[in-house]
Image (cartoon, rainbow, N blue to C red):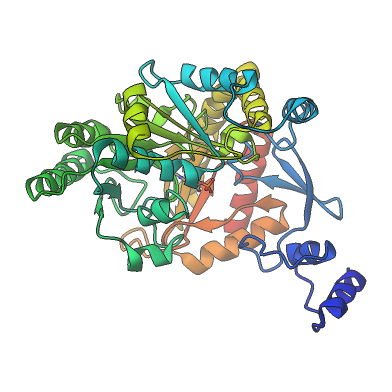
Length: 443
Ligand code: PLP
């Protein structure tokens, strides 16, 4: 590695940098790539994956407990086959109808309530959230949007503007545009819903929506993660969405569900987040796991909203919903159904949650265990009364987990939460290994 880094540095007239994981890989290919941020000082140099495992360049195997994008598992052969077959047929998207794209749109729509019958394809979750906001704005002719505190919807201009989670998006708070109005949905000590959460936060949000309408700013829509991913894996208080959806619609606005993180099975149902709350959104944004790592996103809405949008707005994506993306998306849906991955999320997730709750009994640093299916949060606190976040301790826990071959990262506003969201095919043995490792690290 030193040789390669030296060669590239000479060519670029730079002093050889210290070798650092992916940085080295980027340089080896002769590019100064802006690699994505890593939590680890020296991230593992991953070369390949299989199911819930990642394998580094030296052949070390890691258990991947964080990659929710790899829904069906890393390098699933059926996904790879579908992509290869389609690449050999065709992979350009233009304004024609391609069988594979139409078929994929139909399959996506079948997972949703019948009135959501129109599908737009994009390349990512941020684009999906962005388009969902545009659909709401253009089809209502309004600009104001109600967003949730502690939410994340993406990094593009509009999706960033409605993202409020502090740790992941420090700039958004400073630059929050005036068309975004925020309301709360969950207890700040996030996992634990007190009995009165829905009664407290629901009416507060409704009052904000009513006030906006009364002051001439009737919102175009309300955007909400139907299960708070970035806040650490927190279900919304029961009944919350029914209250805020009713209020937004009473004033002519639209309800947007951001299902980018948890849609399609992570919580044990196609769309647990809003199915549990017994509501049907007007616009649904999906991405991430539907492509099993391949860039794809979709926005699903009702025909009349899409038609109104077309008269006001503009949509064209050169690569959104390419034939290869659609072929991969179809393969992912087949694998989820045929391998019973939603059931796996329910069964393995429930087992994992029970084991983590038991772990909390013997380790007071565990302040709360929350979440559903295969999206769980473990929150570390210095003291269960003051709830002071155990930020440094959480970093040390993750470092030690890595030495035991477990990939895990601190998240949440105070970087004191482990968000546990492994591929949906994760086995009971793997989650047992994870809890045993955590137990060892905490003891
Ligand atoms: N919406 C939610 C709920 C997300 O969790 C994310 C990403 O973490 C996004 C949108 C943005 O998706 P992407 O990273 O694919 O742009």
